[in-house]
Image (cartoon, rainbow, N blue to C red):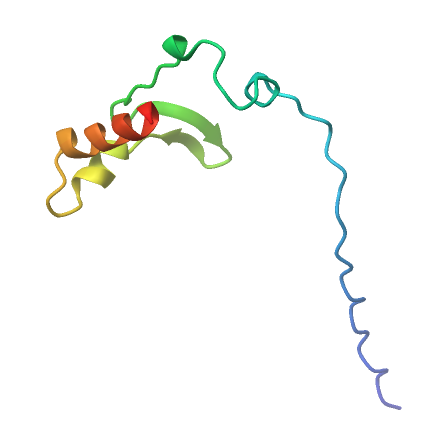
Length: 87
């Protein structure tokens, strides 16, 4: 007597899930900030806790990552990000 053939797993069927409707102020304003003078951005120091997952805290490392590029200083990349945000 020999063993039966192993069962093959059923093929995976891909499908789309319907997401909830999302309306954000930016989209309802004709894609313009209602009060652009109130939009701010900042650069948090490395080590700042941004969130958490199963492995622990998620911390920022922006300065270390961007300053590791040859020729990039903190002032250089911060200026470029600020110019992009103002555009």
